[in-house]
Structure formats: C-alpha cells, structure tokens
Image 1 (cartoon, rainbow, N blue to C red):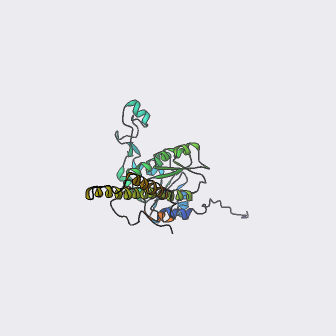
Image 2: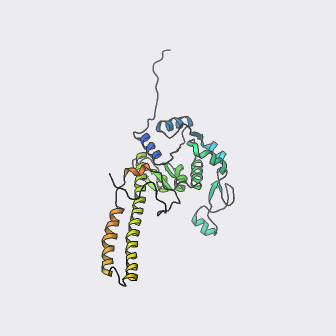
Image 3: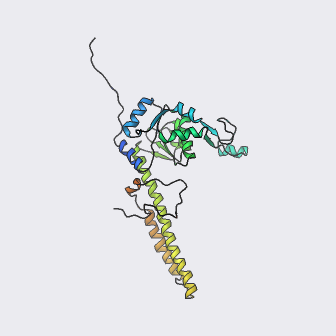
Amino acid sequence: MVFSAFVGIGDPLREGVPAAIEKCKKAGIKVRMITGDNIVTAREIARECGILTPDGTAMLGEDFIKQIGGCVCKECQTQVCECPRTKAQAALKKKEMRVDTIGNPAAFDAIYPKLDVLARARPEDKYALVVGLKERGFVVAVTGDGANDAPALIKADVGFAMGDSGTEIAKEASDIVIMDDNITSIVQSVIWGRNVYDNIRKFLQFQLTINFAAVSLIIIGSIVISTTVFTAVQLLWINLVMDTLASLALAAEDPDENVIDRPPHKRNERIISNVIKQYPVFYLNS
C-alpha cells in the first residue's frame, strides 16, 4: 500500500468578515454565533472570525435549553398552556396574549454573559436566547436564512434575512433583507440606523431651540414693551425658512463613520436627555 495523497476540504471565511466583527465590537455590539453545525466546527470558525473570545464559551443547544429551563408562559409558568399566542386568538378568547419568559432565569444569567457560540441549535434554542436577552433590556438583532429561524426573527427587535440564500419564510419573518448575504451590510445598516436616530435628535433640538427662542421673545416683548416682537407674517417667514429648509438639511445629513465607535443607545434612553453625553448631538463631518 502506497500513500498517494491527503485531501482537506475547507469552507473559508468571506473577505471582510473578521473586520466586520471587529467593527461590531467597537460599536458595543455583542456578536454570537448560533448554528446547526457541529460544535467543533462552529468553535473553530467562530475563533477565526473573532466571535469566540478567549474567555468565551461554546455550548450545545440541547445543553443550553436544559439548563435554562426553556421558555415558559409568564402567567402559567408552564411550557404548554392554553394562553393565546396571537392578537387574533387573544381577541377571540378575550384573554391576554401569552408572554414567554425563561424557566430558570438564574441559570440564564450565569450563562449568557460568556456565551459566544451555540452549536447544534434548534429553533427553540434560538428563540429562548432572544427571549432571555430581551427580558434583560438588550436590543436584539437576529440574522437567518431558513424556516427554522423564523421564530427568532419575529421575536427579535430587528430581523435580518438573507436575500440570496434565504427562504421566503425567513424573508417574511424579518424586518430587513440583506441582498448580498454579507455581514458587512449589517454593519452598514447599524451606521445608517444610528445616523437616522442622530438626525431625529438634531431635528428636535433645532426645532425646540428656534421655537423656544421665538416664543420667549414674544412673551417678553408683550410684557415689557406691550407689543409683539414679531408680526404674524414675520413668524410665518421664520417658520418657512428656519424650520422647513434647515430641518430638512439636518434630517438628510449623511452618516459619519465615527458613529460606529460609540456605544449603542439603551432601550429606555430618552431621545431628549437631560444629561450631556460624552459625544455631541451635533458634529461636523471631516
């Protein structure tokens, strides 16, 4: 017997994936891999692209769901109950819609901070992870391409479906369809999402400043000099020029790449805060 050859089959990472994962980390986004692959394969791929950190852990979906007790009804505290799961069923039965919660929250709290990879994951495993993270105040985004990803995509705050390889069920269950099936497009969506949020804050700040100044001048003028500072036509002109044109310019401003370098906004954060952040609402594009 003579050794002829050794053949190895590999599935290399797409170009730019490790850089996209690094950008997500800089943006304060925790990336987790949930896959149906073997745990050895999943762990190695996650290590190559930077998802699996030195102090992170990889678990099997079956072990994960057993330890956390799965998802149970918040009212009945059982996995199977007669509580309606849709708004239509709730209206028909005249009962509150079922709210899922983690069966063993203490175990979930001990697992999720270091959980980087969930291998051999089933639909209920993905769904349970999304439920647990949302219960703890996190804003959760899920990517998927198969029908088994639909429950997690629907439950997530933002669902991303793959436009090229994704099934129609996944696309219907998602909020955003990634047409090129590339994780770098998800990073761009984060940049544009933060830009929209910033533009809304700029618009509101500008509107409040202009209107507060105009109203204050009118009130002070009426009290002090017993006359109006602005006539009705002048106020209309201020609203037309300052409010409309300037506000449209602020709302249509393109994103700055620096938005990816700051932490995300909290779910309960006010759009008009009473605390000055480390980063300004207004900034100049360099």
